[in-house]
Image (tube, rainbow, N blue to C red; front, side, top):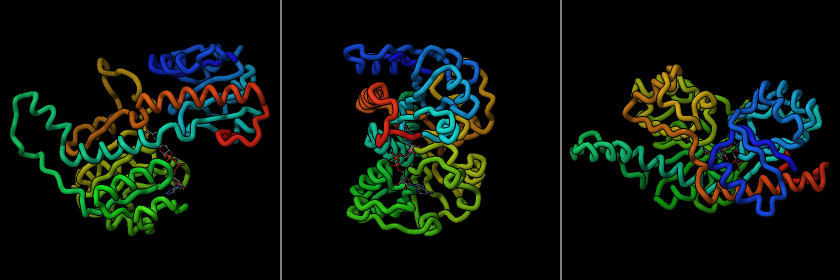
Length: 332
Ligand code: NAD
């Protein structure tokens, strides 16, 4: 099938072309993000493939449907950027890659915690500049401290498992209890208890109306002074302005982010020769105790292989059976 890839990078081309072994699909890679204007570029394709920051709202869906698109294949797990109801209404199928590598994101999350705590990113720069002082680099032992995991699905459970192995006391909040976490000794508590007792809080819930700004000024007020907050889920689960206020008072002692609520305008592109006009984002970068990366938690060769293979399998399944009933990757 002819597949139009929006927002594609060289690494997408490399992994998708490698997975398209017998050339079963015709893959067209576009640099452009999906928008109302660029939706027209899909006019003679039945399938488009999009990523986390392509906005697939009702208007875009209507335009795609009008031009004959029947399937939107997400090359990611999260689907908060899609208007599922609008897609259903227009008869468009949506598929995604629910679990390409939970380990990739979980390992990255623990990496962020360790780097942030022991200031490894700052030490790296200091040593290269001939500064061998330890001033400011002090961290804390993570063993025997308390971690609070919000969302114990595939990624959160792996993070919890690793933190248990590091001898942390692990608490969790999730409306659905995960047996593997209970087996690891994780204790499920209510959100207020998690906020009040955790030294490290890590977010692994999807972005939804319920989780939007789940970390806001009220939540931060309930946390321990000096708490480490880490978010590798979706930017808007955190109210960034409230977090900046928390950093200024010292309530938040360390902040690790791989996602940001306005990341669409910045992430995945080189803006190093431009003036960045997002003052909230720029303020985040001024704190010595924040570590921000540009949505790279998923980015391992294993994950990219799985994303490419599963996405092409999803498209082949649609080609063989456009009704696609009972498919676990089907979203609408
Ligand atoms: P998952 O569906 O396996 O787990 C999500 C968990 O969150 C579930 O257990 C669910 O019950 C729980 N949850 C739902 N609502 C909640 C709420 N209100 N409070 C607490 N928990 C709630 O998903 P996953 O594969 O573990 O991925 C988690 C998130 O990580 C994804 O939604 C995605 O946004 C993000 N993600 C980020 C990257 C990255 O590169 N940084 C990569 C992949 C996924």
